[in-house]
Image 1 (cartoon, rainbow, N blue to C red):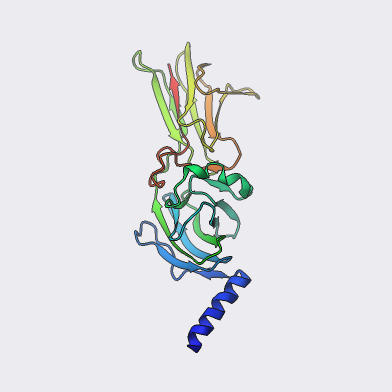
Image 2: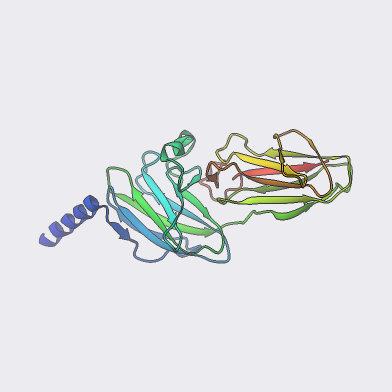
Length: 265
C-alpha cells in the first residue's frame, strides 16, 4: 500500500511539474508494435527515433481519444530545434504556426486517426514529444513507417509524343519541399497546373519562371504558354502546412497529400 501511495504521489508530482516522461525504448522504423507510454495530464512523453536514408511518417495513436486536439505532437531535430508540430490528425504544421489555426478541418477527422508527421530522409536522430492536453491520463502508441518520397526535383517536361496531353504529377509532403520542372520542348505549347484538392490546407502554389526576375503564378485550371527553357516550381504557400491526408483512411499512405498535376499540351 505504501508503494502504491508513493507511486501515485510521484505521478501527481510529475503531472504538476510537467516533467517529460522518457519512453522505455527508441521507436524503430516499420515496427508494427511501436512504443507505448502513459502520459499524465499536463505532461510530456519523449520518444527517440532515427531517420536514415528513407523518409519516415511518424504516427501517434491515442487510446482514449474523445475529441480533436487532446494531444500535441512535436518533432525536434538532433540539435533540439523544433521541426514541426501537430494538434490535428489531418495535417501537420511548421513549428511557428499558431495552434488556433490547426483545428480548421477538425470536423473532417475521426478521433481514431493518428497524429501524423512526415519527416524527410537524412534527418538523423530526432525526438518525438507528445504533450497530453486533456484532463485525463493518455495511453499513447508511437509508430514510424517508411513512406514514399514523392519529390520531383529537376524533372524535365517534354512535348507529348501524340496528340494526347502529357501529364506530370507529384505531391508536396514535407515542409520546405519545392518540386521543380524544366521544360525542354517546342513552341506553341501550354502548361496547366491542377491541385488535386484546391481546398486542402496545403495551399499549393505553382510559378512559371522564364529566366526573368519576375515570376508568373499559375492559376489552377488555366493554361499558360510555356517555352523551351522555362521552369515551373510547385510548393506550399508558406502557411506551414504539408502532409495533408484527404482520403480519410488514417493517413496510411497519404496518397492525396498535396497532390497536383502539370499538363503540357
